[in-house]
Amino acid sequence: MPHPATMFFLLTLGVIFLSWIFDVYGLSVRLPHTGEEIRVQSLLSPEGIRWLLRHVVTNFTGFAPLGLVIVAMFGIGVAQHSGFIDACIRKGIRGRVRNPWRIILSVIVLGLLSNVVGDAGYIILLPIAATLFHSVGLHPIGGIIAAYVSVSCGYSANILLSTLDPMLAATTQEAADMTDVLGGRIGPLCNYYFFCVSTFLLVFIIYHITCRKLLPGLGEYNGSNTFCGYKQLSRKEQRALWGAVIIGLLYAAFVLWATFSSWGILRGVNGGLTRSPFIIGILFLLSLGIGLMGMVYGFVSGRYRTDSDVIEGLTQPMRLLGVYFVIAFFASQMFACFEYSHLDKCIAIMGANVLSPVRSDSLWILILFILFTALINLIMVSSTSKWAFMSFIFVPVLAGMGISPDMALCAYRIGDSATNAITPFMFYMPLVLTYMQQYDKQSTYGSLLKYTWRYSLVILIAWTALFVLWYLCKLPLGL
Image 1 (cartoon, helix red, strand yellow):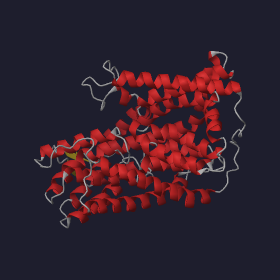
Image 2 (cartoon, helix red, strand yellow):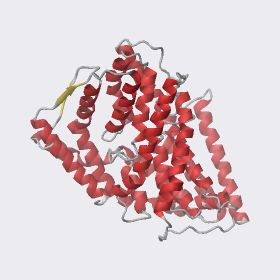
Image 3 (cartoon, one colour):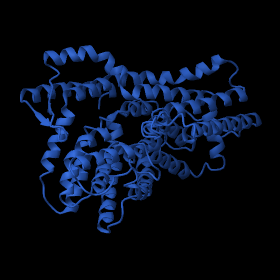
C-alpha cells in the first residue's frame, strides 16, 4: 500500500475520473422527500476545474476534523508535556502491572461511551490508549486499534444518551410525518434498551478479538518511544497530581452548573442540548479542562516555571501534526471532490431505490437493510447525512410491511456503525494513520484494514444476530 497521503491523492484522481464518466452518461437521481434532481457533476468540465482551483485552499482549511484536532491537541500537549498524563498512568497502574486486561477493558469501555461527546474519542482517546497499552507492556498500536474500533464500530452503542440520538430521532419523525406513517412519536430514547444491551455485547467482542488476535499478531514493541517506567510518585508529584485533579473537578462542576442550572448559559436558546454551545463546544471544553489540569500539575510539580513552558507544551503536538497536515490536505481534497461530484448521494439513492421494491418477510428485509446500510457506509460515512435521505425512502417502505419507524432506525444504526472502522472515507482516517505512524513509520491504510476487518465482520454478524433475537422475542427497543 502507498503512503496515506499518496492513497488519498489516488482516491481523488479516481473520484475525478468517475465523475467524468458518470457525467458523460448523465447519471442522476431524485431526492425522495423534495423531488429535487441530483446529477453527477464532472470535475473535468470547465466549471469543475474552475471550482477545484477556487477551493483548493478552502477545502483544506474547511476540513471538519482539522480545527477539532488542533484544538484538542493543545490540551493534550500541555497535559503530556507537563508530565500530568505520565503521573496519572504511574498512579493508576501501580501494583497492577501484571493485569493489563484492566487497561484493555477500560480503553474499550471509554471508546464505546465516548459518543456521548460526539467525535472526541477519535482525537483524545487514541493517543492516550497507545500510552496506556505501552505502559503495561502491550504494543501501543494495539491501544490505537482497540480505541479506534470501539469509537467507530460502537458509535451507536451506549448506556447513556449520545449526541447522535436526538438528531436521528428527529429525522425519523420528520420522515414519518411527511409520509403519513403511523407508529407514535419517535424520541431520542426510542432504541435505548437495545443499544444499552448492545454495549455489553460489543465490549465482549472487541475485548476477545483484541486479546486473542490483535495483540498476539502485533507482538512486542521495540520502538524508540519508550515509557518512563514505574517509578513511584514523589510527594511533590502526588501533591501536584491531587491539585490538578481538584482543579479538574472544580472545572467540571462549573461546566455542568453552567449547562444544567437555571442560569444555563451553555444550553441552547430553546433550553435544549441538541444544538447547544455545550454539545457543539464539548471538544474545546474537554481540551481546556485537560490543559488546565496539565498546567496546574506542571507549576505545582516544578516542571513549569513561566508561561514560556506552557507555550512549549502547546507547541509540542504540532511536530506530530506535521505528518497529519500533509495527509489531511490530500484527504480534504478527496472528500470535497466526492461531495461536489454528488457521487455519494447518487450511488446511495440508486442502491436504496433498487432495494426498496424488494418484497419478502419483514425480518429478511430488515437484515438486507442492515447489510445495505453497512455497504453504503463504506463510501458515505456521515450518519446524519445518509439518514437525511434514506429515511424518506425506507421509513414508508418498511412501514408498508408492518415495520415501525423506530425498528427501521435501529436496523439502520447497526449497519451504519459496524463498517466505520474499515472505510477509507472516514473523516478521522488521516488522524488514525498519523497516530499509527508515530510508532510504526510503515503504517498505511492496508495496515489498518488488516487489523480492523475482523472486528467489523464479527460485530456486524453478532449485532445483526442480536437484532434478530430481539425482533423474534418482540422486546421493546426503547422508551
